[in-house]
Length: 199
Image (cartoon, rainbow, N blue to C red; front, side, top):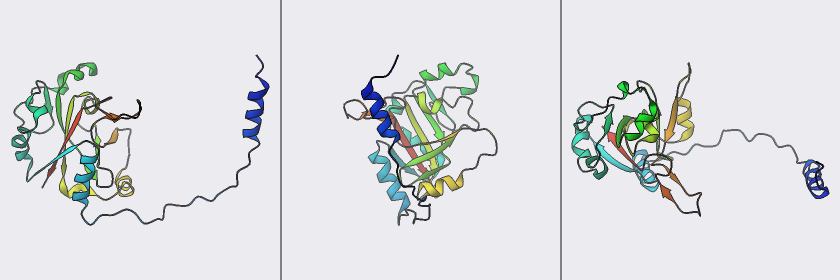
């Protein structure tokens, strides 16, 4: 079927546009840095819907969790940290990743965090089903305070992939504003994110 003349004329007008070639601007601009990366991370995390807790050591996380309502209400809990009393899910024993959807609360480690956008780098190292990061109702990530860096430029410089593997940045709980420009939290993933800053 032939295209209508109006469509042909529009496509021709697009093809006939000649834009001037521009040199790549390069990446030599000054990177964002903060006098207080930890403070900026906390403020940014709150602005994207997350919550933070400072603890001196991982052994203090259990007592802090008691004040988190979503943790108290959870029935199925998975933890990569030892000493979490409510942890009752063995992820390694699950063969079908679809079964992970019943987990209410997961406590996992983040490798480092970015002050610029409160993103936390996570990988599936030692985790049988990486879907756990995205399918649980509520997520907690544990990050050393010493591992908070300023910006995404520095973050990408830290990454190297010598073999096929998985990793991603998580910033706050799942959210979308696509529908009528109304912000919805937990639309496609965890409904809340708790970050435990250790050290």
